[in-house]
Image (cartoon, rainbow, N blue to C red; front, side, top):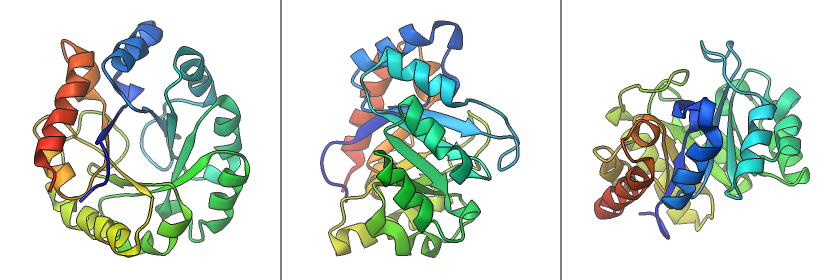
Length: 225
């Protein structure tokens, strides 16, 4: 259902921050396509993680696109800081934006690519009106907040619905999937329209993270329709 090669976006939430530069080098050598940065504020989700300074550090260490996933209650206050730090994609949640259009426009005007994310309980209809205006839609397959959660297969009908809208309208928006992605679940994600697969523990907790990137991509490509 997707178009082009499956892309892998390792999430540094699961990386060893005492050697982040080395970790990034390994996954880049392994063929990673983007670097996924999970930003949590302790309000929208029950955890507190990285700020713009981490994006700055990642930006210095790699030329790969940086995908900043803002799991925060006030993305309009902080989006510019992440763009200034070097984020290429800035993705925020439909659940905190009744009208996401102003922030979508502001992100694009600032030179980055806007995206919208949708949590497992949220209906696909919340994101449907904005698909023409964004560069990425991020479908969560766990409840956001912590690494290492189990993949929620019951989100697949929603993922397929979004993929169908993309195909029917001839849109260029990338469909990203985050949560419990591994060699085991990647074929299911890809067969339902996932194109950019975020993987944290499955990459950085593997014996060989570089090989894990390729293995997840190969599994996904084998599962595509």
